[in-house]
Length: 262
Image (cartoon, rainbow, N blue to C red; front, top):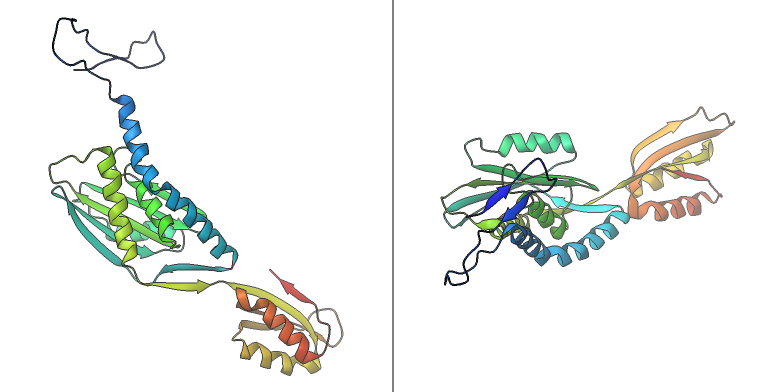
């Protein structure tokens, strides 16, 4: 048995091991406080290298103006040592939609409803009563490793009577979250780039023809430019099409036009 000394005369908690006579054949007790932390670190380090590589991949994809997300809600279930784990993944666009999704799928009757979500560079996770770092963080790591963005994963646990230990919890929550995302149908979403260009009235027809051929959206015209015979036309195109659209318009209009991008 271990005894914790939390006397007010010391600022740190001390752990004392009962003295055992040298003539005793019983094994000496070993403090397990640091072992607890080591087991969590060891379990998380198994996926840390994968997470690092995937973060680079996701960062490159984001810089290219696109991201991968899931098309629909997906559920994955697994039983681990008599505990039932149910992972539910869904598309979210911000913190508000994430908490709305959580309220829809969580089960108040369950022992734990642990979760994590990622929207671009923003993310949050929650252990919901499990030991710190054993549920929410592994779920978040699974999301990062999958390369999927704008997604939330809620893992619902129904305790079966057998404790899994810290390492077991990390593997269980991270594992079911990974499997859930692996089974999810995904789609590539390309970001839109708002653009604008000032053109003479006589080029509006040519400009609109080019914008339609590139499937530009949100096309608007503003005649209050303060310049005679000039109109500002604003529109949005796919990120990877912006330079192509600009070059095509300049070529077909046979003018040196100035484009504005946001």
